Length: 276
Image 1 (tube, rainbow, N blue to C red):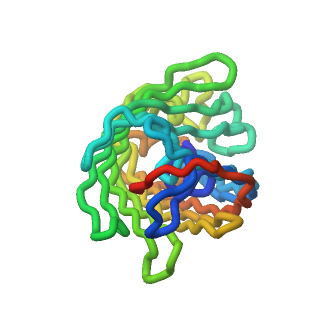
Image 2: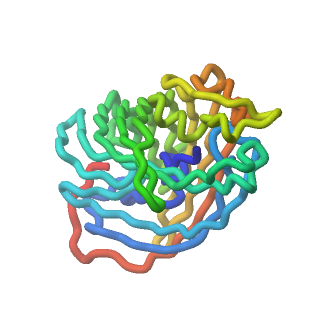
Image 3: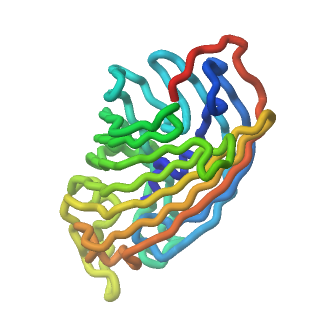
């Protein structure tokens, strides 16, 4: 499943004030283009390159925020703990274009929504580096045609954000890693093979819930006066995943990468204090 998580979001949705700035515009918007390469779903042996639009959206409201950490509503915010709304998504897959799924129903796009508890474990002087523990729990549903409940996903992760890495002013580096867990309904949507779709080379299969593999993501971005650039790379390992024996899983690891550029279209004249 192609989840739009930190790395992909770094290309599609990003933003940071200049290092050392005391305030920043309430909102900023831009638009550009990019390219991403990833498998049809985690475990697929079909890799595709896609041209994508790159909207740049930053909103620094007291409740609603949109920045390099995603789009979220902040319900509780202290010096160390933040409780907010977490979002995720997966994109559609044309089964006829995938050898492992040929003859099976297409995978509809999904969205995931739920609470996340984010705990700051450490921050450096001047907040140029910050280490967080993020605990998002999301409910997933299809969004094409009929809504279909496709289970729950829990993805605890350690996230390190670094401003001006290696002395390169204005750049932002993000490193994230953590396991993914999902219930039986979620694994079934992506990895089950119903008996009517079984073939000589694709036996029927029912997935269990549990461990879904581990992700490692790195993202790098910079906001120039007139434009923004960003890139990410992601590595997935599915070794030991609950669905590892599914005939739809052709690889136990996968790489994904992407880059984008967006030109600034406008920003708010209202400025707000920042602490990101």
